[in-house]
Length: 455
Image (cartoon, rainbow, N blue to C red; front, side):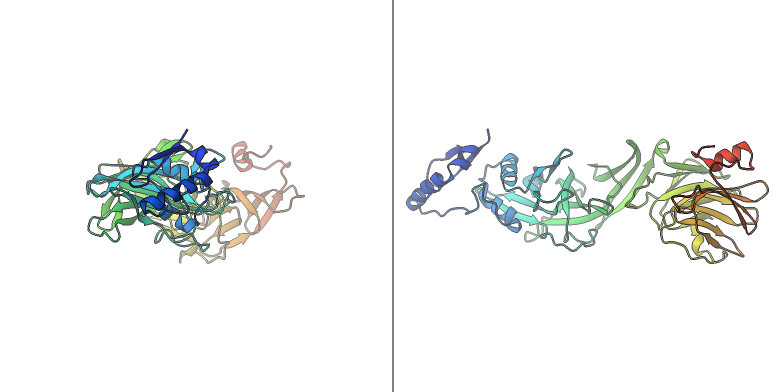
C-alpha cells in the first residue's frame, strides 16, 4: 500500500496511507488547523488532497507545492493518477508518466512529468503537457512546462504550442556537456488519417537560470520506431514488418541536429530494382491511408550508399523500364532518374502537358517503343508522350506493352455492377474484355495482366 508523508515544520511527521487519507480527509484538515495555529504555518495548497484535482493549467505548479522534498516518482504518479492526468491505454501502456533523470547541471536529478487534460473523454492521443521539476533542499520548483494546449493545430517542428501529447523516448548525453538530455516525442493524431510526430531534445542550460531548459528540434518522427542516445549521437531506427530497415544517426551541429550517417538493410526493402550501371535501388515505404512522409529512395552502387529525398509522399512503384532507366511512382508524382537526379515527369518540358489528379497513386508503369509512358494509377490510366498525353477514365492497377506495341491494362470503370475489365489499347482504339473472356495474349503476358484475377 502506498504511503504519503505530510511534513509540518517543528512537528512530528504524520504518516498515513493513501486510502486512509481518502476516507479521513476531513479529520486530517481539522487536525492540521489546530497544528497550524500552534506553529504559525499556512497550508501548502488547498489542492493537496488527491481527490481534488487542480485546474489543468496549474497541475505541475500545484504538484511541486504538494510533494515533500523526499518524494519519489511513484508519489508524483500517484497524484497524477488521482487527478486523472495519467491513465492506462486500453491497448497497453499509459497516457502520461513521470520519471527521474539526471538532466540538471552537475548531474542533479529532475522529475519529468507528462500528463493530459481529458483522459476521461478522449481515446486517441489526448492533448497534454510536459513539465520538469527541480529539487532544492526543502522543496520542489517548476523549472519548465510546455504551453497549455490550444485547439488550433500548429507547426510542431517550430513550437510546443498547439494540441500535443508528449512522451520521453530516451535519456542520455547528446550535447556533450556531461549532463544527460531528454529525447521527447511530440505527437498529434485525429484517430484516423492525420498523424504528426516530432522529436526534440530537452537539455539543461547552465548560463540561463531564468530559462534553464533549452528545446532543440531533431526531426520528423512519423516513420521512426526506436531511438537511443550513445556517444553524443542520436540513433533513430526504422522498422518494416518488424525488421530493422534503416538506421539514421544525428549529431548536434551548432543550434541544430544534422544527419551524419545512414545504414540500410536491403532484406527489409518493400520495393527494389537494378539498373544496367550495376546500381541496386531500394524503397522502404509501406503504404498507409494517412500518407506519411517517404523514407526516400536509396541507391547502393559499388558498395556506397546514396539517398534521394522525394518531394511527394511515399514510393508506391519502383521499376527499371525498357530504356534501362529507373522510374519511381508515388502518390502525387512520377519520377525518372536522370544523371543522378529525380525528374518529375508530370512537369517535364519535353512531354505534352496533362491535367491529373493531385493524388495519382501509381501502381504500375510501362514504356512503349515510341517513348510513350503508360501509368496505371488509382485515379486513372495516364499516357505521357512527347506529342500527346491523355488521361483515361479507368482505375488501373497493371499495364504492359505487348510485343506488337499495343498496350494492355487491368482496370475498372468504377461501376459496381459491370464486369469490367481488361483494356487493349491499339492506336487510338480501346477494346474492352470482361474478366471471363479469354485474352489474345501469351500465357505469360495474360497471367501478368490478370494478376490475382481469375483466369
